[in-house]
Amino acid sequence: MVSMAAAMAYGIIHDQITAHLCVEYFTVAHPPLFHTQSPTVLAFCWGVLATVGIGAVLGVILAEVSQSEGLPSYPILRLCRLILILLGTMALAAFLAGVLGFELSRYSLLSLPSAFSQFISPSRRDRFMAVWFAHGASYLTGLTGGTFLTLHIWNQRGRPEWH
Image (cartoon, rainbow, N blue to C red; front, side, top):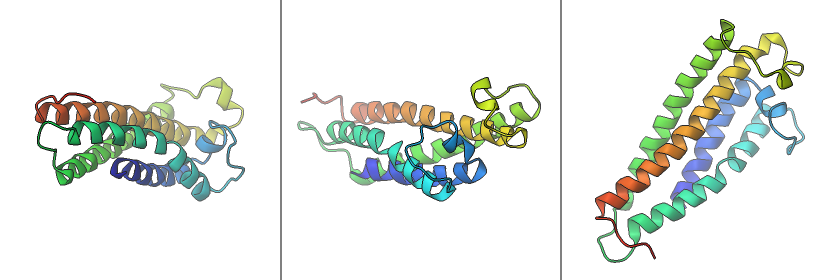
């Protein structure tokens, strides 16, 4: 439950920032599940939808790894601290990747895929690339970090048996 709530909170905050930077990322590059142009509404809806599943799966895995029988449980406060560190790392990676995407686009070292070009004005393309890179970095860092977190706790507990 902690993992799912943390993932959704991160997703909502992350998407509030990115939707206000470039709403086209949500209106052009995503399927039209939410029929609105409001960056706030889109960010809330996509922030939940994009994170609830992975947060739940990671939560189940972390619960099994940290609380399984046979060895002392991994302290929940330490687990929460590690989840917060992971979220902070994701945010930093998203920020840095966003800056990189923006600059690569601004200097024409990277261009928008042609499928999106006709729908995004030239004045918004650098922001689109920033948001696209930020989202990619969040997903990559989150999946990698979640895997690392799972293995770390499993090793700390002496590699308990899976049930």
